[in-house]
Length: 235
Image 1: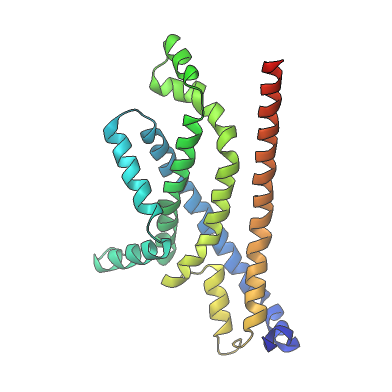
Image 2: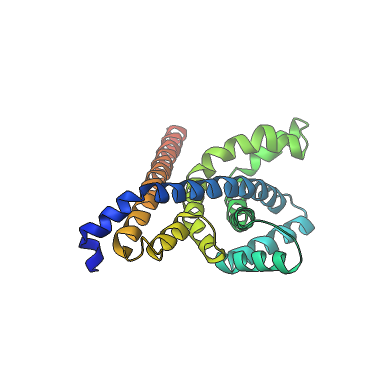
C-alpha cells in the first residue's frame, strides 16, 4: 500500500501515461469489434428463439446456455489454444474479438428474445391480417417497437463487454489490464503497483459509469412513458 502514497511511483505513472491511454484505446477497439460480432450473433439468436420453429429454438437455447454457463476466461483460453494447436494462425487480438463476440452474443440474443416477446401478440396477428410474412412483420412492425425496450439492457451489455476485455490479459492481449500488468512488472517501471492499478481502474470507471447512468436514465424514461400511456388508456 505504501506505493499508493509514493510521489515517485505517481511520477512514473504520469511519465508513462501514454502507455495507459494506448491500453485503453486497445480495450475500446476490442469492445467495439466484439460488440459488432455480438450484435450479429445476438440478432440471429433472438430471431431463432422467437421463430416458433422447434429446431431453431433448440439451437438458440443450446448456444445461450453453453456460453452463459461457462466462464469467458475459459472460452478465451480454449479458443486461443484450440486454434493454435489446430495449425490456424490467428493473432491474439482477433482471438479476443471472436471470444468477446461469441460470449456476449448469447446475452444480446437473450435481450433480443425478451424484447420481441414483450410485444403484444396482437401486433403479430394484426401484421398477418395485413398480409405480412414473418420477415416483413419483424422488419416493419415488431423490431421498431422492440428497439426502445431493449436499449437499456443493451447498454448494460456494452458495459459488461468493456469490463470483460480484461479477460484477454490471460492470452497476452494488449488491453488495459495487460498494459497495466506489463507496466508494474517492467524493468524500468516496476513497483508502482498501487498508482498503476488505480489509474487502470479509473479509466475503466470513466468509460463505464456514464454508460451505466445512460442505461438507467433510459429505463426510467421508458417506465414513466409506459405509466403515462396506461393512465391515458384507463382514463
